[in-house]
Length: 298
Ligand SMILES: Nc1ncnc2c1ncn2[C@@H]1O[C@H](COP(=O)(O)OP(=O)(O)OP(=O)(O)O)[C@@H](O)[C@H]1O
Ligand SMILES: [Mg+2]
Image (tube, rainbow, N blue to C red):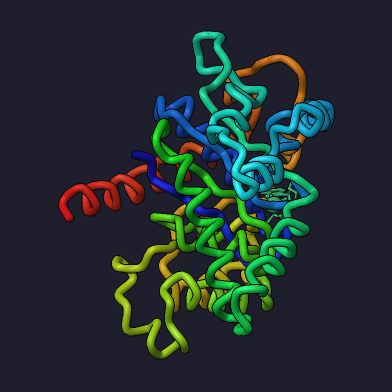
């Protein structure tokens, strides 16, 4: 049974898709895990990073996207979740020349429409928007969980904001990684998503949950070596669990956003960002495993 790792922040452009894909590569190649990436963002960036524009366009034509999966299953089409996945995606090999074992449920521009349609459908059965939203979220959650069976790790790359799909991902996730950029808005955005993840109404209640019992951790991304960045990071770290690893702002990491035909090794893919990915992976892997051990014991 897979661990579900959501990568989420209601703030946009903080590196959710970038870190999702970097971790997918690290777990598949270094960790030899079977990894599945679920692209829950209608911008489809994780898909574009893993299969490129043409690949994504082909996936749409072949009706292998999250929207097709949701539409079909809500309509009762007897399909299997695996029918919608693309196998062995990405432009990285596993060290022996074979493509890294990452499967992908491609994203879709229609994901928002679907959430709206589901909401309307459910509205016929209840007048309470809260009840409707929670039912739709519950349906999406069930559909996401169905992917767990054949993987070690399922990564959910969430859209910015708080879509029902993002809320479903937060519920589904065993752990949530919350990347942030060190700036003033980030503190508020991290506070907000932390309340949702821990299901607390206000920050005082959140503060009562010890850091090592929280389901999420934050990570500073796009860090430049300035005093201002350090102060922002320390401010957020005073209230939220945070990885020791910080991801620097590097061209090599930005460039890895672009899919290229052919397979390369991780070092070629991430250049001088490879060391940073090693540090990130060596901290995230035990964090997830600790959770797995706790789950196995319960
Ligand atoms: N550590 C980094 N160094 C340099 N560039 C980075 C770094 N992390 C992310 N970027 C760049 O910042 C931009 C935003 O990153 P990304 O798309 O991963 O963020 P996001 O949180 O997924 O955004 P969205 O909210 O739109 O989904 C991209 O162009 C990416 O290449
Ligand atoms: Mg993104």
